[in-house]
Length: 142
Image (cartoon, rainbow, N blue to C red):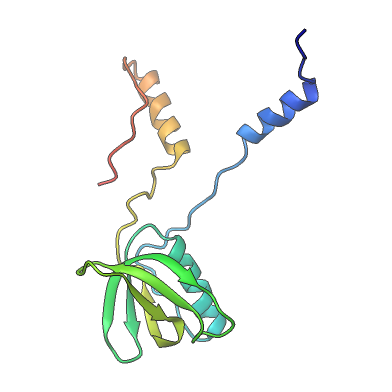
């Protein structure tokens, strides 16, 4: 004996597959103003989600460029920190939010414009142009 799946369950599953995607902001080149605690927190959240390198200027004037891979948010800026892979070193470093004077989204976002929707659009453009053997291969990020 086989069980049938109710129509409304199939429709619910289909609607999940067409959910809208996440729209990424174009942050490359942006230098946010870090006037207050909330601006610092918001900018560092965006930096954490960013897929390219950022440049952090510390309050002592030193700079570090790298990829932010982790962050810890605490009650205060001194209790919060970002962790990054510096561009010119092999060791991970941690920088408290309270030591950050400036932030710049300095590196290129390697995944910008490479969404699934962009891939589908290119696929249909190639198909409409009569191209054959259009496969599903990922494009190189670099």
